Image (cartoon, rainbow, N blue to C red):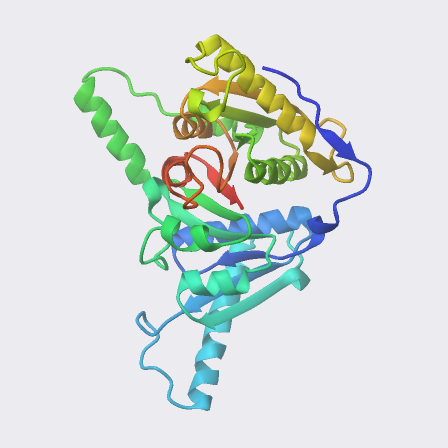
Length: 335
């Protein structure tokens, strides 16, 4: 475990102030949780929230309007419903209503969010555990929104009681008579949990690290930087050009790569609190396995969309897809 040095700039980055928090809303419990998360985030950052309702007539909209008056009536009804959802979700949140935008778009959820969120600070959607996402998405999130977005995508996890029930059934079946331990202490300590960012030395992971630093600073949370590595991720190891390097040598190489990454990232000091804590770790473990394990103890997990571990062809080819589907906390994927 190391306490890394990160380059802190005295002036804020010019790109940091642009964009709204765009959140998908469709009336489901998942999207309600995502909306609450977005409103809380905006209450801290001062950003605007754009609540987007993308709709088609394959749902519950009734017959498709066939004249301008009917279209205007349908649009008004959707806007009123959006406002009702926002009012309910914002209860107890110090959110400035002047920073609220309501958008309805006649499109699928994925298309609508990509269109409205093209220049967003981030796009936010909700999901249940094990990859069950909002009913907008006909396919998986990996093949639609998150794969195509050019901005960070935050997937807010909503824990389902069915998970704990199934886990209890498994425990009773495999170890009958043994006590079952739920994560009550972890849940109680949620506010103390760190933000975790997975890095691998790629340019995308630099973007992820910057996002994670800003997020952790905003929430006054400690930041843990993790490089989960395998030998194939390290490139050519000096002295072992024609041989397999020992794990100890690989660990040293991974730690050097991690230090170089941290040294190369510059962040603004404008919003970094004096007590900001950051630590870095290199672990010899597959990235998906290590980061999913870390998510059990994290308040938020940040990963890059592409890296050195086979993610070049498709955004959610393997590691990121598994993390979004199986992480125990909210995940942001940075492009």
